[in-house]
Length: 82
Image (cartoon, rainbow, N blue to C red; front, side, top):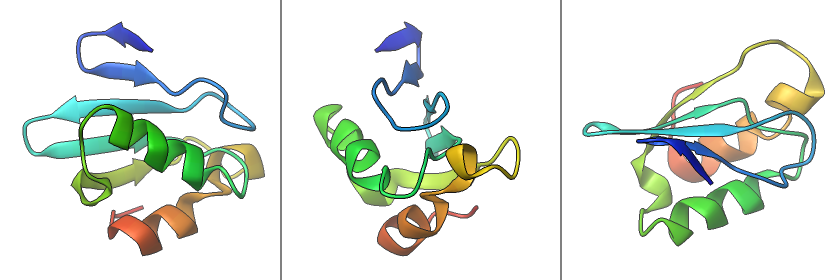
């Protein structure tokens, strides 16, 4: 769900709220949900007509499993910097 132009809330990710930011240089994810959430995040990126490789960065707001659990899987799949 786009909450502001270029700011998307990825609803239904297990754990905390996850947001995806669009910019000309690529996509940035804010938090990564619980472990196993990476598939839903990658499907959301695809539903926008974007490729997973366009994810450039994952920003973790705090070191709790519901915020960082899928960060490693996303890094491996996309090459994004965490």
